[in-house]
Amino acid sequence: MANVKTHVEESDILIIGGGMAGTGATFESRHWGRDLKIVCVEKANIDRSGAVAQGLYAINCYMGMQWDENQPEDHVRYARNDLMGMVREDLGYDMARHVDSTVHMFDEWGLPMMKNEKTGRYLREGKWQIMIHGESYKPIVAEAAKKSANKIYNRIMITHLLMDDEKENRIGGAVGFNMRTGDYHVFKAKAVIVAAGGASHIFKPRAVGEGMGRTWYAPWSNGSAYALPIAVGAKMTQMENRIVLCRFKDGYGPVGAYFLHLKTYTQNANGENYEKKWYDQTKSLVGEYIDHHPTPTCLRNHAFIQEVQAGGGPIHMVTKEAFQDPHLETVGWENFLGMTVGQAVVWASQNIDPKYTNPELTTSEPYVMGSHATCSGAWVSGPEDLSPPEYFWGYNRMLTVDGLFGAGDTVGGSAHKFSSGSFTEGRLAAKAAVKYIEDKKADGIKVSEKQYKDLKEVIYKPLENYTVGRNEITGGTVSPSYISPIQGLQRLQRIMDEYVGGIATNYMTNENMLNRGLELLKWLEEDLENVGAEDYHQLMRAWELKHRTITSQCVTEHTKFREETRWPGYYYRGDHLKLDDDNWHCLTVSRRDPKTKKFTMEKFPVYHIVDEKKEKKAS
Ligand SMILES: Cc1cc2nc3c(=O)[nH]c(=O)nc-3n(C[C@H](O)[C@H](O)[C@H](O)COP(=O)(O)OP(=O)(O)OC[C@H]3O[C@@H](n4cnc5c(N)ncnc54)[C@H](O)[C@@H]3O)c2cc1C
Image 1 (cartoon, rainbow, N blue to C red):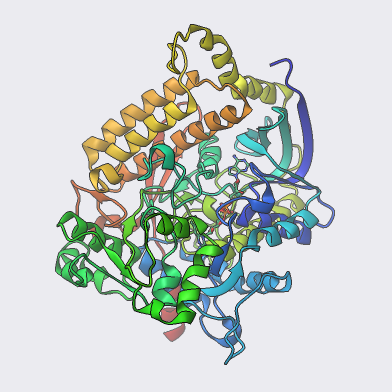
Image 2 (image 1 turned 45 degrees about the vertical axis):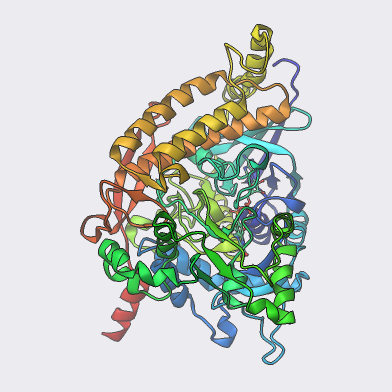
């Protein structure tokens, strides 16, 4: 790749991904590290990147502590309940105690917040959500990051992390390429914060062919947040805890405002409340968890999936009643305009006016993320004042690789952070990263030219594969010597779909299927050495696919390790259909050896810090 230009940039803090967590991390790095050099690298353009690119209609995580609406303890209990007990309460509490200050900054920066006219407070959509006119949400937080960073690089995909050549298991930076110019970029850094979002498109989506990009989760979220740390041997947690969403069919429009603000409800094709019907069956699987309030998201999915399987579908959202009120009708439509315009277009194309027709719902293919109603991601240190010894190793949100931090979807164990909590977690990680540098933990890092030159060969190889192999094509797109990124992606999606609990099997899997899935993933990994890219855009697709594949391997290993069905409605282990608190009331943690590429798995205790604290206080 002699003709590719190389740029080397040295910084103190490197932030990978300029979404919600990345902009929070960039902003806060400057606050604590006045004289530090701060660089943020984004695959798209930070003005419109990440899951919030199109805007949001609600900030889903706001305590309202100033009015005593909720306290952090309440949020920990809520997230714990929704995740069937399996959360890192230290991380959740830490985020919750700081999240209000983040939202107040958004307000100061000009994000249009809806107000309750009677109380003057932020308008609540539900217990945790406040409503915004959020089309401009992402440009507003991007501006804060742009003012804070020494440099923002757009259109650069980070493909690998760099390691210190002097000290084992210490970070040294990252490398990637510009998808427009093709230039190679080397970012040396003392601390790195990974904030690269979650993983969509690892399971086959419901929408295929021309509708393939139409998923609930952003199609550009390709699991870099997991693949980058996994590849250098960082530990991961709860990767089996993929999420399945109940959303409006085909457009995946949000249902939160409909349920919470418009007070709409669901019913089966016969107009029945089907959730009640599945109470006894669900209780036989998960015991008293079904009696918890609110009903955990996965269990509501479970009733939906069972009802459809039993022939009661399609499931509808009853909108006809609420939409008779002109105000609620406006809110219903605006909900899509600020967030998922595509849903309105789908309804128009299907002749659905929710005032006269109750629209259909569906359950999505699974996604992997750490900030929504799910908690897959990196195993990180918690804050020193809250975390028990197993959860603490020096710096808040630092992974098990020195100097490597995470935030937002990257971080596992802490669900229900959403946009505001992810930005907050970025701030927490940045504060700790600055301290890590101030404590001189990053002194003496050396990244040899050889390390990044070797990676350059690896990164651009798909272009080479194509240039050589295309001459062997006699017709169509099938080459004897390379596979294209789309062919590889479809192969990955089928493996995950059919063996790891996707829609093909109604989210069902078992040990035999997982073993077969792992075998097929291994062969895919081998074949990806021969992925071919005809241009820089396809080179990005090739690396997205490689990141998705490593992420998928990790998901599959975790799913195999947890021998129970903890979250029916997200996935089922047919060979262990019941929740098993005696053996599996624990967090799962994996590590992939960077040399052998083999995963090892272990269990970590779940500490119920919040109520333990309360008990201590009481005694
Ligand atoms: C469909 C949907 C609806 C949601 N609705 C709401 C809501 O109503 N309210 C709410 O509060 N929250 C909502 N959320 C949650 C919220 O969007 C996420 O919690 C938040 O965006 C997570 O922040 P993040 O920084 O981890 O990821 P993102 O915000 O997704 O940012 C990740 C960034 O990393 C970049 N990136 C990825 N890979 C690379 C790479 N290799 N190199 C460089 N850059 C890379 C991406 O381009 C992106 O900009 C929703 C999420 C989704 C998916």
